[in-house]
Image (cartoon, rainbow, N blue to C red; front, side):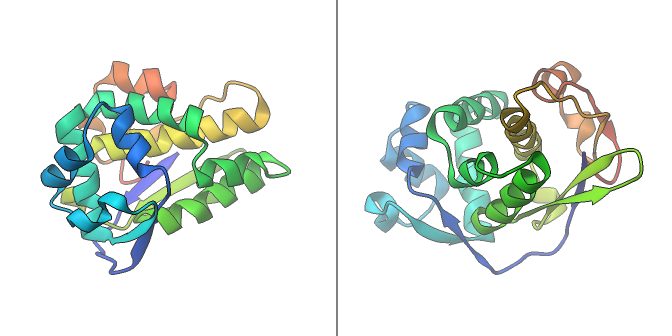
Length: 195
């Protein structure tokens, strides 16, 4: 697994899937409290689905992290995805094989956030490359771990087996406690330009 933070700020708009209110409820937060913390428009309170730009997506994530806590956010989102089947997960688990599933997962994730997930094949392994389309200084360890753990969850659901990456590299590795990375990824994060 590799991660490449990008310094490119994309102006693209991303879909916030239906069910976002349930995610806020899942963490025991009120919609009003969340909207105030995120500085997102109050009009979205009643919307089941809407779009946000990159800056708004980052504010959405930052607000959740401040209200819930970095490590509780990762654990909570993984549990929420197990029970809610977000569109990217559904697209992946309905695929004919793991590679197709991971490609579909990456395609769907690119519609819902500033992230690109691709597969690179090598003679002895396949690398999953995550490229963040946000400024490096705005990238959070919780975003990285949640995304990588989500990829592993999809692969494990597709195969019915536990999958351990050979390694996980990230420029933010020093900010993630080793025990937390091992808990969610099966391996510690190591320093590197990619994840």
